[in-house]
Image (cartoon, rainbow, N blue to C red; front, top):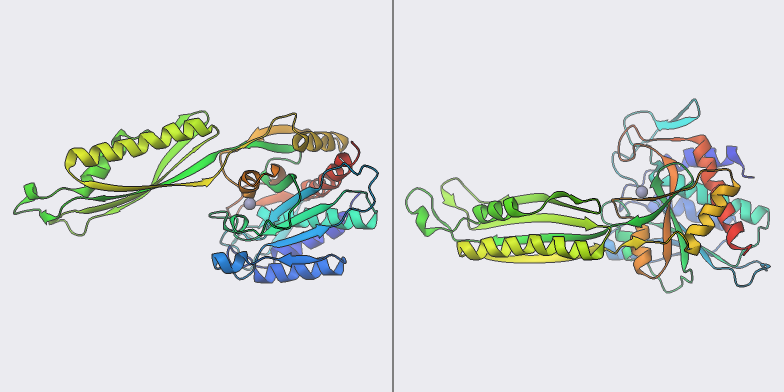
Length: 376
Ligand SMILES: [Zn+2]
């Protein structure tokens, strides 16, 4: 159904083009020329300027080609162009049907396996004139470390209400239908400085306020759906000064918006209480990083993927994740968006790998989803 040699060769070439987050220029230029060669129009938005990256998001619109079912949905497929570090000078190695890096870097299957699979699927759809009612492709920048690219995406031309982000571990057939919503919490505590040896009773220790608040915070695994963590703490200047400043950064995530609100409030409340008790001030900022993904098994976006997986003889498995992805942002923009398992393993480590068989199955799955969505 797909051209396996072409796909594997293209994947190996893509991972050798370095594209750490914010430095996607070479990758974007390469993908643009590949897409132009396929006769497609590529729009690069100005997200790069907005977030300080060397390239913008690439948006490809493939017009409907006289589909039988004119009520079929426009479908969106997306993968991110950037990789984590160490991601420069990647040397892919194939051994026993498994692709890994030579050892000093990540492989970059996260997310170039997604990029390569989408490219191969587009080629097959064009070559075999597979009917569809419109396809939209996003190759995003700066997904790793903040989903910056997709947050700055130019949505003005996007018509899809159903989408797939190819960016999860798990064998092909894994369909992520739930992902948490996430709050970032920062607090600056202001106490009062005093000489620690001569008049400590004149001071108000901001560090002590932070410590007492953190000790009372619920952190770690709160319940099966909810987590919280204090990630950064800074404060003080010298041992002989009662510290008048302390700063902390924390996060909370939950698969339930209500539970996230409760957890966040608990963290905020203890900070406020401990500051008040000590006579200190505290400034707290809560920023929602992204919204919940909570798709129903009966939603078309899930059904298409399940049916497509079944047609390919893949075991479909609905699953949830503890992390955010571009799909988290796309869902909050009104696009019902699932994340597909693409077979990548040990991502964000130098042991990252992917089976060639899985890479091929992902491309087949994209084509199959297009077929299924246009059959109904
Ligand atoms: Zn990724």
